[in-house]
Length: 105
Length: 195
Image 1 (cartoon, rainbow over the protein chains, first blue to last red):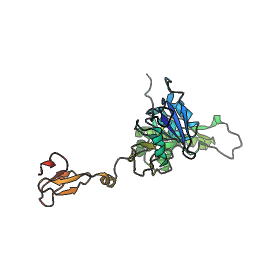
Image 2 (cartoon, one colour; image 1 turned 90 degrees about the horizontal axis):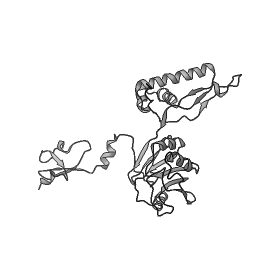
Image 3 (tube, each protein chain N blue to C red; image 1 turned 90 degrees about the vertical axis):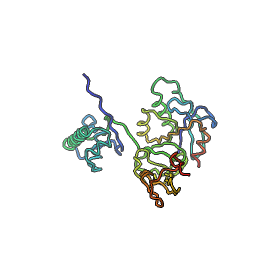
Image 4 (cartoon, each protein chain N blue to C red; image 1 turned 135 degrees about the vertical axis):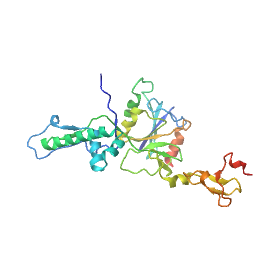
C-alpha cells in the first residue's frame, strides 16, 4: 500500500506541507517495501486547478492514502470517487520522518 | 432572468455498476437509445425504496429540500419505467452531485480522516493505529462515551464533599448528601470560597 505525504522539501527532515495542490514535494511511501520517493510538484506555481492536477499525479502512482494539512473543495469529491483516503493532519511542525514512523507503529 | 442554480445533491453511496443492459432483444441497441439515470436519481431510489426511508428523511441525507427530493424521485421512477417498457439500457451518470464520505477524528494524534470504502468499518486511526477514534459527523449522542472522558468533579462549598460530575446535569442541581445544599464545579472561583 502506498501513502502520499505532502512535503515542503525533498528530505525526511523536511516538514509536512499544509497545502495539498501547491505543496513543494509529494513523498510517496511504500508501506510494504519501505521505499520512500520524493516527487517534485509541477503544479506548485499554477494559477488555477493545481488541486485536480495534483490528484492526477498522485493517483497515477496508485496511492491509497494522502496525508496533508488541508484539502480543497474541488479535491474532496474527486478523491472520494477515486476511493483515496484523506488524512488531515494540522501539525505543520511534524517532519516526514516522524509521520513515516507513526505509520509503521 | 436566469433560474436559480441547482443545489448540489449529496451522494453517500455510489452505485456498484455503471448501468443495466436488457437481454433477449433482437435489435442491438446502441448507446444513443439508452436512458441516462442521474446519480441523484439513483440515490433517491436507493434511499426511498431500498433503505425504505420517507421523502423527508431522504431529503435530509441528500441535503436538498423535501419537494426537490420528491421531484428527483419522480423523475427517477419515470426514467426506470421508460427503460423497462421500451427495453432500453440504463446508464447511471451525470447529475449535479457531490460525493461525501464519513469523517472521523483521532484523539491520539489529533488528525482527521475519511472513509472512502463505505462498506468497510473504520476501527483504528490510519496514521497512528490508535483505536481511540470518534465519528466526526455524528452528534455526540452517546452520553456514556462522553461521561467517560468527563473528569469534572462537583464539590460542596460547605463540607468539601466531592463526587464525580454527571454529564448533562449542572453541578448546581446536585445536592450534597451530608449538608443538603447545592454543589458547585470544582476548580471554579466559587468553589475556592470553601475553605
